[in-house]
Length: 343
Image (cartoon, rainbow, N blue to C red; front, side, top):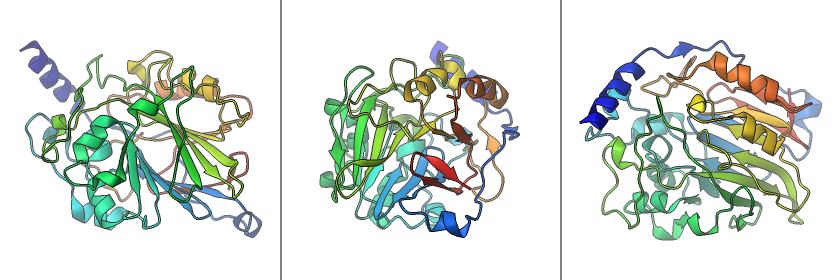
């Protein structure tokens, strides 16, 4: 009864309006001819929630895109939700060449749209994530395309195992991370699936979190060395989880993708990850209010998270010489060697 009361109270509080964004946002800017012709560019397009489309040469990677975004009153227990296929059809960019889809955790807002995208649009891509992720979508996706990384993930002190794309032009390393509580110390949709499900989850609370992962993503040159190194996480983490170990190759992190949502529900975030990664550029993802939002036009900041408090923590923690962006929905950023933002 207490748990139900807490859930109802949280939903009532979350019903409050999300705030208008007053943090400077990044929008598409035309490159100069010199910049446009610069070789070895990495592009990252923000797709909303935890979704990013990354391209380097012929190598394309997706982090789990989410477009359906049901109203928050539809995401309680036993309230049916499913992929809005027409919405995905309208807003998903061309991902026909994607080789890998990375899932940080298995909640509905990171995984529910993935089976439809894989079967309809990203037919060459394999998906990577936790065992719970794999067991959640196994009824809808061929098992040969689903990869569980629990047993080979690294942690803050020990590297994990590199996993390569089919063309060996991308490699990823999963790292043990954690998911911040959603509100007032309460975390919803916890749990794991140890065995494959018979059917896809049909309500939000059936999309269980599983083991939350962060990733190191390397885009590789023809000789197998890292041209760009990206750190990615789709939820705020409690240190030491979510931190990167010494990988022993001397390669720095060019770009780190962080998550403002629920940052205040854990200690020393985002500072711990910023100090750990020392990235040359930071992208703030999963920042917009994704409950029944229109994907066209301006977005509002995620509810129950203070953008002012986040920026008051984030800006003083920026490493010397590092840059940052809060990308507008569907904007594309272009990076040169070293993670230098071209604009």
